[in-house]
Image (tube, rainbow, N blue to C red):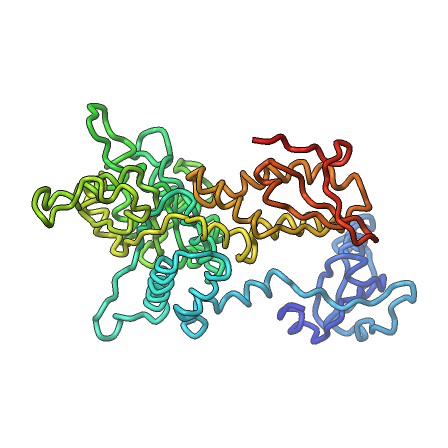
Length: 475
């Protein structure tokens, strides 16, 4: 029950109409008049209609002193065919009230707690998770405690730039982080951003997404997180004579957002026009996280590492770093400048870190360890059909090996599993006697079939029959 209803009648039960004795759940919302008298809208409308028909200033209606009437109807006077219900609690208001204290320094989780929660969902990337946990903790501690108001020491923002190959978990890390902190999150794509006045999204459109994620609550949005993906696509274009409307100019337009300023943002729309109301959003307390794969950045890093000495006993060979999968972790600011990022932009992203490339061992853990691992998702899908799905350890290794060959990181896992699970998801629901399906290495490598166990029988059967599951052809 809401606070207003409690203060009006002091009862946890719903109101009853004074005239027709119907409850609020039957008659609808009540009109409250002095002396705690409630009248439903139907009875109030009938009263007005009667006054109109009778004519005169009061319609010839007998005078009724509403202030000297008897007590309003009690719960015992409600007709027996009506069941008196308790007032419904306003779930949305209660939820909002519960989340009001989310920006409280007392409820801010410590860095080790944030990293521990990230460990439940994200496999590997220990250094990246540690950096993000500390940076987010320091950022919101700065926001919530108001440091600098008394002693004049002002702590600057800790915007981040994460570099990692595709499928290494950049977007997934940010999504999980926002879910842990329960703050508004907006994910924008830098590829659609253009200079103001050209076709495409303006730089301010990323704030519009954050405002929409915060239900148009400006104060809530000013404590949110904005993740700008594919940030490497706005690097300066090389060897071009045309105007660069989606490169360096976009970086310059984002400078004021990253540093902190008051920006006019359209409410409920992605672009400014005369028909859309505007509101002012201050970006001083918004945490910006930029991420990108930065293709061919390895060549820039390799060129810098092999530049110092090319001859002599201490010389670095030109092919010394060709097989180094984690070469991105040796990135420096000068490498990013050489890639095409302007110094002013990099200066507003003080925390730069790289993610590791996904190895075969890490991909095996991604398949089984996280709370929402893809194997657990398929196990839950088949469990709805009362079928137990299992994966052999060798099958997990075979899937990870195939994923490494595709060179698309963790994204390759779903594509591989979707391929060999298609026939199973199609054929298994046809037979209600199937109780368990075990995925084997031979089935992954297209040399055999999965193992099937029927209900009520302990023996396992190989699905080699065409009528149950088509046999995969050999390599």
